[in-house]
Length: 342
Image (cartoon, rainbow, N blue to C red; front, side, top):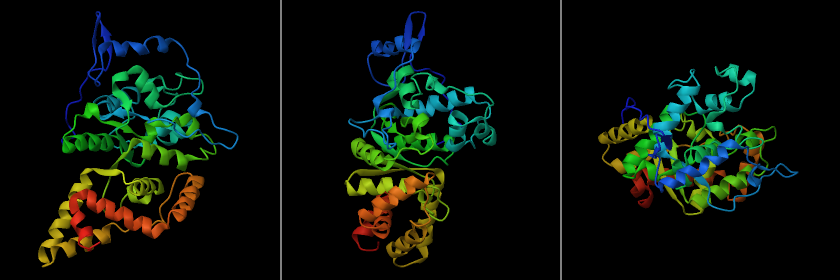
């Protein structure tokens, strides 16, 4: 997929000369008018965004919303570029998070803007702020629906690489990007609440619930080589896949370019061996050695909660083995598991 593909300049829900264009997704045209009155008032805080005395948020009671891949690929990056002149293809979600929700010092350290930027109006949509997903859904309602995939990924990814990987995923899966709606923590969690000191005390339970309710996990994977991988160095991502395995949910892979290169390299490595399957399994084992002790989470309390949960579920080694087998199967090497090579 060419990184130079021209960006579509269409806007989801544009009113002009009495006509409306809504390329963002399915739904009757009149539906897109529903957000207009809400733009003129600050809405009340959502119950889901109010922590109790112990710092816990209510567990999700219904299937969460997601942002369409179509919007993320064709519109989101364009909008970010428009309000952040500092944005480049090297900008990560960690950078972007600091620019949007960080203090003045945070923004300056991340090379961001001097002034606060209210992306999609999410800061003023509700008292105390709203999630980006809620703000996008209000302004571009065709681009937000019930989530169809739970995206497992890392904030250290570059924004451009991430949205390209999701679009390529849709092409590979032969599905319309307008019909794929992603639950992504960066967008779905109200970061005004989640990034407060102390975080959210029941974050593990909330993520577990969302994984189960969405039902399909799409892993955006940077590389198969665990020694170089951002994905395999994060506790959250490994845990999300393990929850999907325990609940027998569908796991799919949205590979970045480096994954494709690594996979091709693995096949070439096996050519000199008589037993190609065994050689491939050995190569995969060497690459995908997950070190749970080295894996980290940004919030130490989250890391401790995940490790406690993992021990209750059987321990880190069974978890690591199960995750490796799930990835091998998802890449089409399932026969290696079935034949006992892994």
